[in-house]
Image 1 (cartoon, one colour):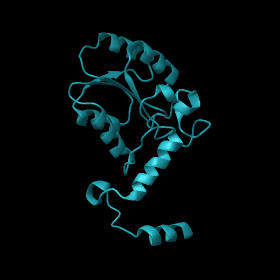
Image 2 (cartoon, one colour):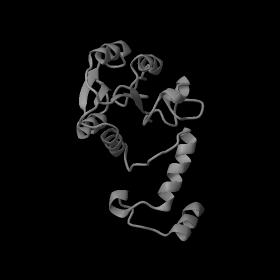
Image 3 (cartoon, helix red, strand yellow):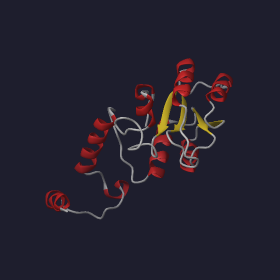
Image 4 (tube, helix red, strand yellow):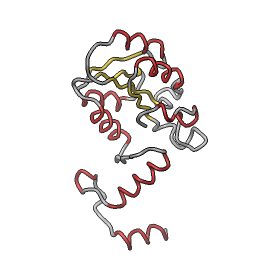
Length: 175
């Protein structure tokens, strides 16, 4: 309560709407800097909801010239973000790095390639075999996004998710 009172006295109050409607405040930037430090990343952006995070990340990372390779059992918000991006969407069998490898071998195009997995799958509760996907990444050279929404704060010695637990944070490009 005291911390809330101090923050209100120092920063004031607002309409508590989205940043799109009300702008970015210093506290947004402070939170993002603190989270980037915690995640051991150069940058971080905070979205109002996980759904908006997937829309923003996927639409921002890929465009019509790119291909997104997506675990078939991904959350609907990930599918919606892929659709919003305009990128070509290629689904691979759930948690099947071998199937991803085959689809990457057959893929054509000059754009970027992004592979999307979830740390803990929200619909099934199982974990991605991240080491297997990283091995495929080393062969095919794509960017890897791990949605850690359900593993953040739960897995890993630092609580940063599955990539933290697996010791593969340097191999995951976006969380």
